[in-house]
Length: 439
Image (cartoon, rainbow, N blue to C red; front, side):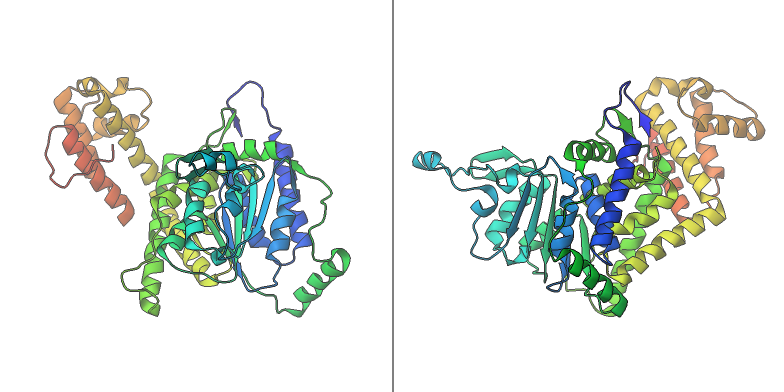
């Protein structure tokens, strides 16, 4: 873990061990729900929400309450949704004094607004008016009702449901739950025996754990995973970022192809990963690296993003993610495309520098700091063009011809090269009606 302040506020290794022990304890208490448990802890680490779908009586409430019991110093709000409920069930009763003044204001004390953790059981039993009111609370962490705007303390809400109800409102609500899973009933005799043992020992309620984690520690860890900590940082290199986006897009393509082949695609609907959810992948990648005690994200971590982009428990979705991740990983490894990707992204940084500081276009490229690709370019120039440093015209020739001779190993690298060529033409005063610069 890279420390960026002189005095660390967190004992990182101790917190990692306690989180790992917490996951192990919950898995011993709640049988055969390891991936769902991991998913909810990922939601806690990244400050997101989780949705669990299942038949009745499979232990959703037990699992969620046992997880939240692992933390102290946080308020916990729990509610069973129903169609008759109004927003005041979640946001607090109307303030009588404000009502006399003609204003609808909620007294948010002890409501979901002032709770760090929340559990909403049978969330789709709630009416659309109430669900609409929850949207800003879950996403912006703000209660917005009429003229009332209140900052919410909400860190993570877990919702459970026996069914999905698809409307425009519920579709927007589903997007707020970054992590989604299906918990299937256990039919295996051995697993049923293990569940029975836990029931006979502890009953059907969550138990007090042998240790707890202070909520302030979770807050600190979550800031690290979201890249908001001023004390510790986890690095994600540009090539890992680019490769992650490639896998996400390929997975989206495979899902849509599968839906069309199976006849599951509804008229006018397709499988869509929103840019908002795509950006959340990088918080999860930092969380994965954090839990492994690393200060940087690795290519291999991308395969674990099925936790975010698939419905955990749906084997078909996970298989498609594994296909997208493994296919691109094998292709890039076999063709040396990872090195090419890193090199072209360094080249992109050089173009960015030249665009931001055009006065450097006429200087020797060897004088430009912070752009490692220039060394490779200059070595190539000495061998091929017969010069090292140059004037504006020679720099234009150097940059342009360096890209032209570059031989992409994969189609993805070829697409990146073509984008950089368009940017290069724009940088040196060329025109390209279809150009969309990456800079």
